[in-house]
Image 1 (cartoon, rainbow, N blue to C red):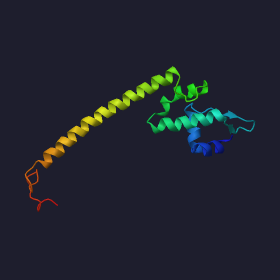
Image 2: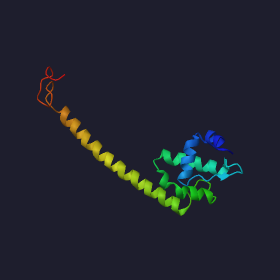
Image 3: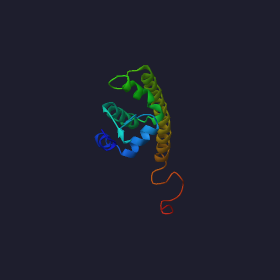
Image 4: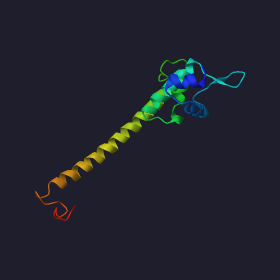
Length: 132
């Protein structure tokens, strides 16, 4: 298939496909007139790229999944390097979740302190008529 068809079938733009090619993720072959020709594997690769981007992977981290797809793994997730990359990303998400939980706790405490001020009197000591 030509680049326009692959773009249409994957919901990508031709520009994005060329960008993926520059990063070594998509590998078209060239026909005699120089046009990029894509096979069904490239269709699966682009779908995998989209799925990985949705969960926060950078293009540089996608090579193990693409190599796994090219090696015949149906999902691109079953090869050792893909599994390692999934573990790394999960650890990253877990760390971000812990950071967000800490921030949430701090904000909840600040809000509770603000609401604990005397009724009708702002915690900052200013009267409501002064603060607009």
